[in-house]
Length: 194
Image (cartoon, rainbow, N blue to C red; front, side):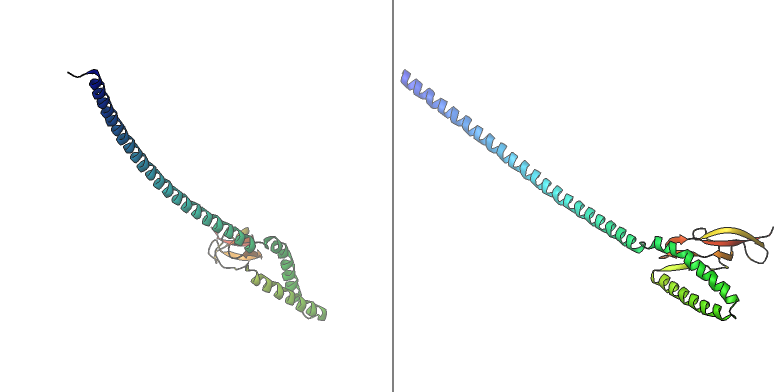
């Protein structure tokens, strides 16, 4: 039989081995937890990096869109910046054209001839300025009525002209850069007699 000392020693050895086994199992468990945690964090890091790259791409696209939109707005502002000024010039052009028309009927008188020449020169300069600023006159006749550029002032009933054609231009219209109507042409439109 064993004595008490031996029993204690054996018990202590057994306890030590048990503790050692528990510690090894605990260390193994800690190692697995740490390994799993590291893998999880690496996956999270990779996903976060991908999200950041995706966000950077979206931000870059938005910056490009804002830049393009701003440039278009600036270009539009520059392109149509003279609109009000030109609209104010239109009555001047109308009056010069009326004066020219009146003067051409009385060109035998000497003073009217000089005024007529000056008015023609002024009119020519205005036409050059309009060409420079891409202003087009709307004064064609014998074309179809277009409500986007014409304003019908009267109807001319006839059998000789097809319906919905411009018969007379009472006041010409003007358009800027082929897209912005400054003033519609006031016209008389044909209609077939019934």
